[in-house]
Amino acid sequence: MPRQKKAPVKVEVPEAKALEATPAPVEAPKPSAPRDKVEEAIARIEVPGLKVDREKFSRGGKAEKMLYSLAEQPKVRTSLPLRFKEKRGQAVAYACLNGFRLIALKGVHLDLPEQVAQLFEDMHYAETTAGDGFSVNREKSDKGITLQQALG
Image: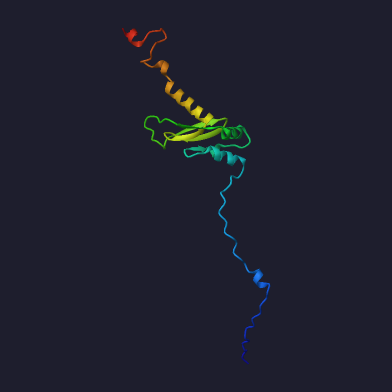
């Protein structure tokens, strides 16, 4: 005996419409917030051309204290000079303050924390004046005479 198909019965349940999924309002994406206090401080220091060496960064020590100190300092606009045969934007300079390491591009303008800018300035001065006392064309020797006077 073949089965007979029953006509579908349409039953309306008033509560069913309330259960239907309504699309949630579309919200603008929120900017990703730094994970913690350290990431927030690093975000204040890092600018294009200046990066924190995160591989060597240790939390909880002098490096972390230095990070917070540098994050609060005013920024100074400066440029690190290139050496012979270095290319702009490809050469880097390293700085380490109490274990807190920074990597900066040479030959581009940077907004650095005041203490970092002073460190790079001191490093450049030390490099350019090293050996001045041994230069052949120095002004006066240990005896108080110039090279031309000594040679006669």
